[in-house]
Amino acid sequence: MKQIDVIVAGAGIWGCTVARVLADAGRSVLVLDRRSAAGGNVRCETDSETGIEIHTYGSHIFHTHLDDVWTFVRRFTEFNGYQHKVLARHAGHTYFLPLGLTLVNQFYGLDLTPSELPAFIAAEVAKCPHEPRATDHEPRNFEEQAISFIGRPLYEAFISGYTRKQWGTDPRNLPASIIRRLPVRASYDVNYFSDTRQGIPLRGYNALFDALLDHPSISLELNTDWLSWRETPAGAALAHVPVFYSGPIDALFGYRFGPLPWRSLRFERERVAVQDFQGTSVVNYTDADVPYTRIHEFKHYHPEDAAVMSAPSTVICREYPLTWKPGDEPYYPVDVPAARELLALYQAESAKSPRVVVGGRLGAYKYFDMDRSIGNALETARSFLQENS
Image (tube, rainbow, N blue to C red; front, side, top):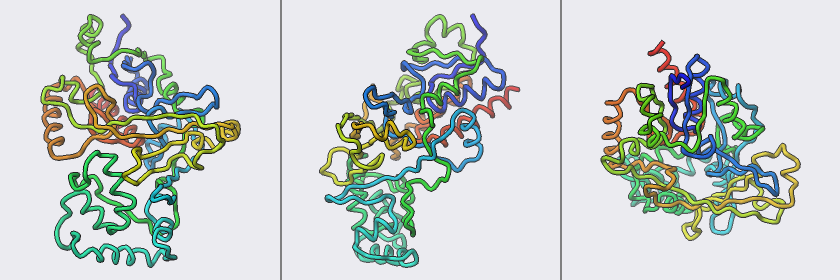
């Protein structure tokens, strides 16, 4: 048997980054993934008719202000410079997100200047005499927190219905921490992210993962779930080897204390015989009576590809939030007190097994943007190397 120094369980962005850092440092790494291809939820596929790169598990846009992460990821891919812009549909009208001068002026039929916007929003908040104010008490739930930031009209139009669909409950049942800050931009900047470094890999996300794993010291085994593989003779023979695990932390311990709550998603894909369906990559549907939260149109992620952009057909995808149950794909951790208490129990169990390093979105029970996932993986792998040098 080939010598294996480290096992990486999960070939998503966190696991592939850990594997590459360890391999570059001279470790022999075995990467296992239960799916048939590497990439986790960033995995893409190409539509056979149009050549459009489809984000299989929902749109993923790389953006960062972290120098270390940007330097690392550009070793493996070039980016096309795509700048993400999101639209919102409410009551038959289309608005630019995030909340800023463009949206506020259109919604209220005004022509506010940057210096006038903060006072206007403060006045909107003050118009709600029965609503909580930050000066009265700390907001007790999601709704109170949001209204204390932007007032009730904007909250009802763009936040309330979307949140009910996204989380499957009344926003008053959600903790204020979910919406810790809701900035209103005092400018006409309609870029969704403030990071200046953003884009889509020029050759696609799958090529990025291929490049990360393209190292003579990395072996990849697909269709292999480490949780069951570790009980096989091959797994037992490597029981002494350190493991970097990025699966669900509760699954690691057989859901001993019960499953952690998640929100899941269902995607409904459609090829449409028009060149351009909605004019942008993502449109949010904020009204509660529309069953989906977003429509993705993937061709807009590669505006540099003339053949894709001019194709007479396009591919769209409607996104429907779902209540998660074991066996479903987990997407968003539900950050409520009961979940945090349950997570603490699993983290305490994990601390008893230092050979298994738990991380990534599922292992940490935390929603990471891609750059944060890479940054956490870099830190985790480098700490391991320092401790085991």
